[in-house]
Amino acid sequence: KAKDLVSAGKTASIRELYYQLKHTIAGTKENTFDEQSESDPLIVDLEVALGVMREELHLKADDKGTIIGKIVIEDSGDIIDCSKLGRSGLAVPSIVEHYNFESVEADYLLVIETGAMFDRLVEEKYHLKNNCIMIATKGQAARGCRRLINRIHNELNLPVIAFSDGDPWGYYIYSVLKAGSFALAHESERLGTPAMRFVGMTMTDIDTYDLHSVTEKLKDVDKKRIAELLEYPWFQRRGWKKELKLMKKKGVRIEQQALASKSLEFVAEEYLPRKIENGLLLP
Image 1: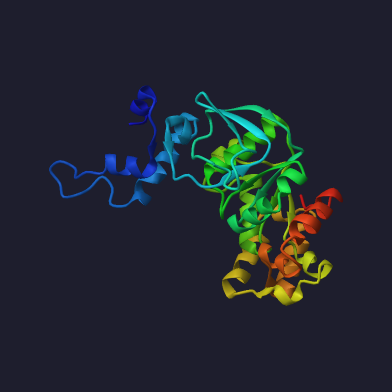
Image 2 (image 1 turned 90 degrees about the horizontal axis):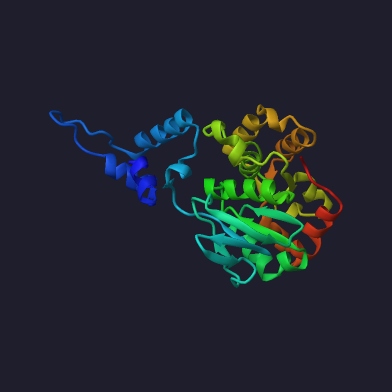
């Protein structure tokens, strides 16, 4: 099926592929697959066996993520200026291999976990005032976002800074962006961005900006996740073990949107510029 897609210049979602391959095996009452969770691992096996990404086989997942800022992209003959798309930005597709970067006028790329914080920063014109590109992953980053971040960093030599919630889930999202995931360890070189750094939210932010009243108590599932992260090799690095242990000690988590307790403009006018300009970043 993948060979047919490549030959025809077409793409298919992994959901469509599942339905194309699902059928009752002749002479039996058994199906090739009963759930998509059974066919997806075979795609990963194919990637490993062939040494390619599924996107190169013209297989894709649902689009997820948004990019905005002074970067011009050529997409199959169309020229897209990501600074002239209003507040909506450009939806990041599942497959970004066909993107060509025509020009960029930015000092760094800011990767934002939540769509709500991305919208706030766009409304405050943060990307224009601070000459950066912004990408919203909207939760755990899809492969298209991770690959685009990787390409922008490697091909345009732009520093990458991540901004997530101050909880074990946000920290894990950062670790996947930076080092890759266990499930896709074979693609870490093309999906991870090891040079990425982390601006926040951190537990030290709670004390620095007096955010104690807008924290949330950790749940048992959060505490369990913290213990798991403390076992990961990349969280043994300078600063990270301290943050995780401090989170456990304080017994709280803090969201990006909690900065609105200062003012709606605070994150764009004070928090991010101060931390980035002063290099207050975790590795």
